[in-house]
Image (cartoon, rainbow, N blue to C red; front, top):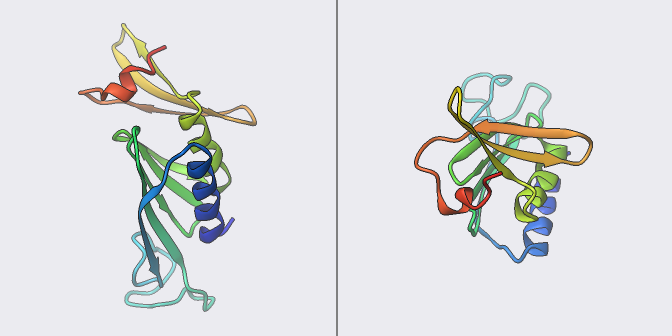
Length: 144
């Protein structure tokens, strides 16, 4: 999936759930994207001549959602301050759909103490990340 396809899928999910993208910033060229290990220093293109394309987007909340769609095939999604660093492009829209449809859950364990945001997507894939303090009202409402 290319960056524009991911962005289109994210827009569709946001619209389906009554959300809008409030910020969309495009960075094109190896000298502009945030994470580029394959290109030489100050190069604009990748060694194969292509222009890498990265997008940063924010979606109106609650929950507060930020996305960075990297050209390497993964998306960084931050939900209420909880960072999911390596969501594959193919799962980005399903991930957001799970968040907005109420399938995301906050799990708390007493011993050893831990709080985790759990986001299940179709295909028996579940993303889990630790949640720091303080916990936002949106996250608190997702306690399981």
